[in-house]
Each structure stands twice: as C-alpha cells, then as structure tokens.
Image (cartoon, rainbow, N blue to C red; front, side, top):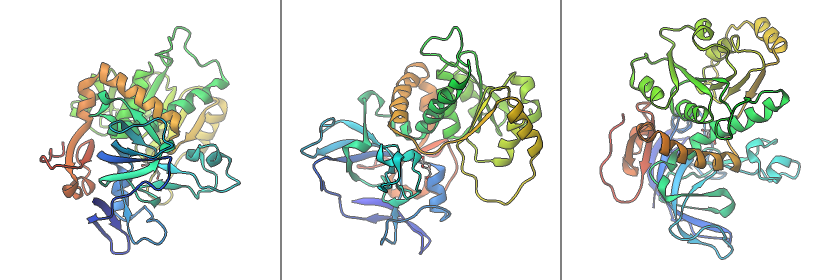
Amino acid sequence: MKAVAVFPRERDVRVIDTPEPRLTAPDQVKLRILEVGVCGTDREICGFHYGFPPEGSDHLVIGHECLGEVVQVGAKVKSFKKGDLAVLTVRRPCGKPDCPSCKEGRQDFCYTGAFKERGIKQQHGYMTEYVVDSEKFLLPVPKSLRDYAVLVEPLTIAEKALIEVWQVQQRLPWSCPHAGKSKPGICHHAVVLGAGPIGLLGAMAFANAGFSTFVYSREDEKSEKANLVRSFGATYISAQVTPVDKLVDRIGTIDVVYEATGASKLSFEVLKHVGPNAAFVFTGVPGLKGPAEVDTDQIMRNMVLKNQVLLGTVNAGRDAFEAAIKDLREFKRKWPSALNSLITGRYHITEAKTPLLSTDGIKNVIYFGERNGSVPLG
Ligand code: BGC
C-alpha cells in the first residue's frame, strides 16, 4: 500500500510502498483511510524541523488528522463493526509506571515526555491506505459527518482549551447568569489570535459556546477569511487597522484569549491587554528565534492584580474528541457553508507533496483510493 513518508537523514519526503498492516491483537480495528488533513506540524516535519521516526526506522509515515472506515475488527472489539466511520487519537501512552496521566489514559498530560504520537513522534501515522490500532484509540463518527470529520482532530485543540478554561474559571463566579446549557459563554468576550485552521475552528467552537468571539489576524477586513469569520457570527479584526493596544477599544473587556498563531511576541503583547480574571490559552508552538523584548513588569503586575491565568495546552484526550464530534454536527447544522469553505483543497495521495510543501489555502486534505482529480489549493 502507499504511504507518505519523511526520511530525515536523506532530507527527503516521498510516497513509498509499504506492507499493509494486519490485526495482531483481538482488541484491534483495521481502518481504510478516507482522508488525512495536512497541518503546520506536518509541514514542519517535512521541513525536517520536527518529527521522529520509530526506533530502528529510517523514515516516519506522517499524518495525524484522519478519518477512516472500519474494514475489519478483532474478536474482542465491542464498539465498532465493518463499515463504521471512525477517527483516531494521536498520542500513545509512555507506559512508565510513574506516569499517572498515561496510566489513566490521559497521555495528553504525560509527565515523562516518553509518549509517542502517531505521525509525529516515534510511531507511523495515518497518511497511508490502511491503519491498525487498538479500539481504545478510536472514536465513532456519524455518517452525516463523512465530508467534515477530517476536521475533528484540529478542532480537539480548541475543545481541550474550552474544557480547561471552564475548569480553571470555576475558581470564581464566572458563569453567565442567563446562559442556557448550549451557550455557557454568552456574557464573555473571547479573542482568537490567528485565522489558520486551528484559529478558525477554535473561533467556531467559542462562538458555538455563546462567547462574543473576535478573530484577530493579519488579513484585511475585506478578505475571504474575514467574510468567513463573519459568516458564523464572529467579528473579524485586522491587525492592519487595529494595533494590539487598540484591541480593547474595539472589543471591550477581553475575558479569554485562544492563541493559534505560534507568534510569541504578538501573544505577550496581547496578554498585556486582557481583562480582570481573564484566561489566556497558548496553543501555538513557535520556532526558537531567540529572545525578544517584552514588558515583563507590566505583564506580571497585571496578572497578579487582575487574577489572570496563562495556560498552555497540547494534544487532546477522548473528552475533547467527543466534544469535537458533537460540535462539528452543530457547525454543520448552523454554518454549513463556513464549514465547507474550511477545506480548500483535496489531493490524491500520489500528489501529497503539493499541499505538504505549500501554505496556501486553509485546510488541505489528502484522499486515498481511486484518483478522481485534485481540487486546487484555495
Ligand atoms: C497535534 C497534536 C500534537 C502536537 C505536538 C499537533 O499538530 O495536533 O496532537 O500533540 O502537534 O506534536
């Protein structure tokens, strides 16, 4: 079967032929991969800045955002049958006896750093025709989400952030007095930094949770991305017209920031302007560009005097995957055209290098099986 692999020592990325995996344990499921999303992490791996092949292998099969169809199940599999759709989580436990997180299936909070990540760190990924894994790393997806479920994994980043924000804010009377269950954030202002796939999906999740949501990014206010943001009820603010120190004038009090740029300087600038009791969530992984100047006194002073929380988050647990599947159904019902426009290109595996080596479009996706042409990058 075909797979897309990175060879770090040769500094090469290519489509390879590799043996089809087989079930080796009764709790395993075999999936035929339908679609795999391409993200910034994949591009970093293809630029040889990140990514680790499995021990003893000279290559890493990439891909960690996937949708598959069940083709075979082991004798002990309870929740899946042939023909079901499923998505896979990314991180696998470290297996160390002194890691309580991994022991409890919360490898997204691994203590030892010895976790593995499929398609990223020491385990082959999903950009291939068939994948086998244990049932416990799979989540069922309704057939109605066939065209969108490849977005589940990138949406889990925001879902985990939201879960954490609600947990952290239980420290104070933060809930909105008139909020229904479906709109718990209704009296709060959330700012999303960045309008890439993580930012846009995050903005949809915050808007769906009822927050007044603002997306702050580089593109101008008449751009397609700005229109897309407005189409799901959020406000787009361009950095071209509104400098960071004027954000509060346009937004009012900033209660939550969901950072999705990996731009540390910008993030710390914004941190200076968040409101009382605010929660600021970092999700981006910046390249190491050396020290930059930030006003640490101002930031620390505010953080203490205003009870602010700064939180980093990576990867996601099953709870965030379940929330993402639930929210995607909601997005499809409320904002179908916004959801459609997030996927800007669909590429056959034989042409995978095009989206992997380009930053054009929003979310580009690799598909498998019969080649039926490729939709150009948006
Ligand atoms: C993935 C996460 C992963 C992180 C760091 C992200 O692109 O979505 O699952 O933990 O990269 O490797």
